[in-house]
Length: 231
Image 1: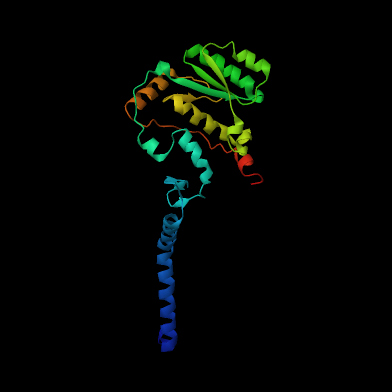
Image 2 (image 1 turned 90 degrees about the horizontal axis):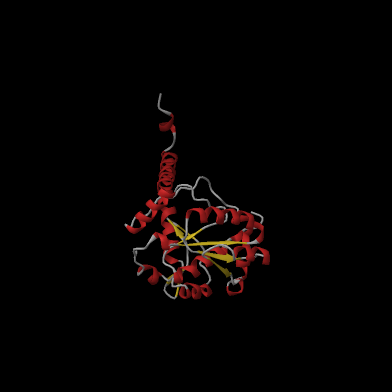
């Protein structure tokens, strides 16, 4: 008996072969065409604002372009691409490293504990940003040795920075401090230093131009409720 395939008419067999070729080409090209499309989007999308890249990119994904009105902050805090490219690793004395912290009234109790623990281990200067403290809490900070209180100027930045849950203020604090200090720590109110030798190794790595490894135990995404309400 003739195989079922040969029993089909010649025109039907040609049609099946043609359809099979089309399907095969499609399957082989899906991955490449997808990647090519992403690359084209990246290449064609306008991400430049007066020479600065204003889109965040990860591998072949690219985000929406930031508003060009934000360029003034990059210039003010010397964070343009040319500023960063010209930044050199400089030797520093770990005893002169400045620690930056901040708090509002609802987290001041944790901050108090952090400062107590910190002063037992370090004598370094602390720059403390007031993002919503009362007079009593400010008076308490005045009694901490080698601590400078600064009032964070929310009015100098876009309105969304005033929403503390976005933590946008934190980036602006870091930018402000970077103008005057080359090396500093940003210490959240819950920070506790447990292994000081590890910190010394960190400083040594930085001096030698290495990138120390960091590990985060779990993803933290609590800001999402403020930046993307309802999602």
